[in-house]
Length: 365
Image 1 (cartoon, rainbow, N blue to C red):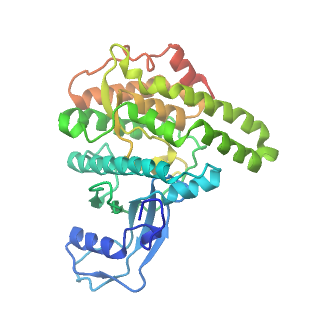
Image 2 (cartoon, rainbow, N blue to C red):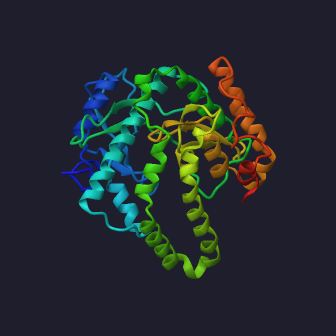
Image 3 (cartoon, rainbow, N blue to C red):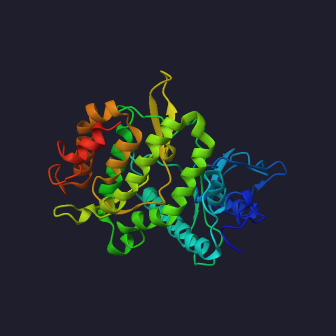
């Protein structure tokens, strides 16, 4: 039995209906049970590769009149089943048992980090850090444990965004305040608490394992076979950019080693799919409902989250026109929440306006 082979539980994982029912009864203080019309729906395919996400309709039976039980909720189950499916779609190489076992260790590490992050989010309960209400958290207890999950509220009316869609400079301000607030509050963590999260080297290590040169060659070959005729010009632009990005990973992961750079705890995976938005009354503006997928939380250079957010979420015009303003918002929020200046705008080589680095970040399309 393993995390990468289908099982008989929810969405082919090892987590069962009984596991989830027991957790929810405990969390809600109820004796109600799941009914015969209970249903699971996969809502996570191709939105990540370290978990399966089930939307649960429990069909509650036997609830007391005064009980307000959730009609639906979400269960995020750590599993490599999603990774295997994604690999087949993008044409990644078949992994041998040794490789899959190694990737299982990453899966367990990242899940346990997310559980720790949620425990702190619950403790902080800060209004500027929107996160989903959590009913239950289960970590991997050891390397042979096959059941780990996060049970949380289901957020309805989510405005789904593709990674190719931009978030406006105005709509991204709540995200920036949220991650800056989290990083500032995390300065209070003890050394023991910090050891439960990754260090700066994790991104380089994980990227190297999941995207080896051989895997990238095969993946890009598959994309060319699928889209080459209709979108050849686009592929000829995108593939070199991705390959160039890979060469920068090492520098980015070790940027904190420059004099004056200070480590803070970052979300480390900010892009459109890791934010839940709804539409405001105007039907265009976005309201941030929750920041999700905290499994990559780790120590890195202060402002690393800003780099990802500005590159991944803003269009070129907003990066040029509002980049400096948004960096200042991050700095001001962090300093205010922390209670004193921990870093300056000027000491951040890759955040300082006018440097070659920010010329790339703010002026490239």
